[in-house]
Amino acid sequence: MKYLKIKLLAISSYLMIFALFTSCDEPTEFDILNSYQPGTIAQISDLEPSFFDVFTLESATVNFTLKMKGEDASSVEVFKQFKDGQRISLGSFSTFPAEVSITASEAVEGTGKTLDQLQVGDVFTITFDITQADGMVTTSSTILPVNVACGSDLTGVYTTSTSGASTDSGPTPAENPISDFPYEVTLTESKVNGVYTISDFSGGVYELWYDIYGIAGDSPGTIKDVCNTISYTNTKEPFGTAVTGGGAFDPETGIITLSGSNGFGDTWSIVLTPKE
Image 1 (cartoon, one colour):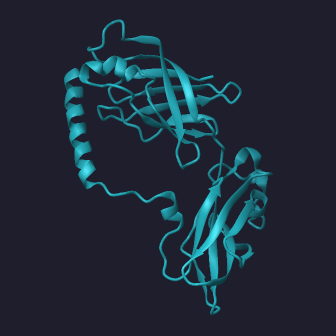
Image 2: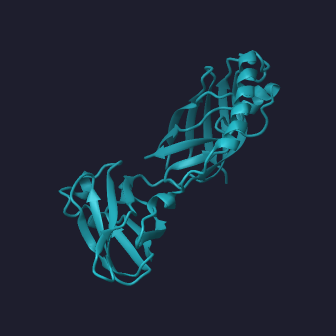
Image 3: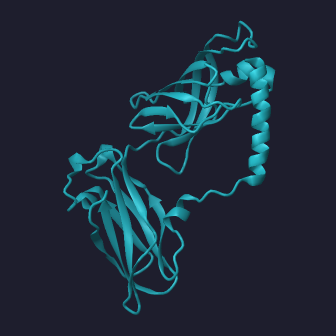
């Protein structure tokens, strides 16, 4: 596997250089929410939170500031829609900026569902009808999807203990297999609830095993938390293969257990303990 990894590392470096000169900027979250439309459009800011927490639906609320951009609007009517159901009015605003709060109870009313029947993954779509000063009514292109999801707060620094085995012949017997290798990682939440950057997806063993091939420092990745179930997502290791696997979060202790593997058959298991 040594020569394969060296070759893949070289290819990966070439692709990174190519991407640097050919990539385009991805739209941000608010580019999607506040997409372009001639005339007056609704603009959303200060969205917090962006979802209804399935664990606290009776008190769950989505809050945001509603502004207008473009020609003067006399009023804006806010609508909800559950899945493919009908649009239902949530009320109107005539002074801007307007502070809008929508509870899960308000969102589900009239949809044929109850709070108890909502499940993770259900989506309410919030849209806006604008009445112009001349009386014309248009539907803004701005769309706010509100998911039913599990709240997640894993951001922080963790001490880690990692055990694993490489299929490569390069690491020394003292390095491979490895047990209880100590390290430290940081989880940083993205704009999407429950999605985090992990500063080193392997708990440090990639550098331990593959420094002989030029791997140095952290190997970052991405993990996802869905109702305390953890999984790797959109992560590739330095030689180009996908990282897969997952684990669990214990809300009582704050400890995360995470097991992973790569396309070469290397495996590892990490215990992440919140750093005091």
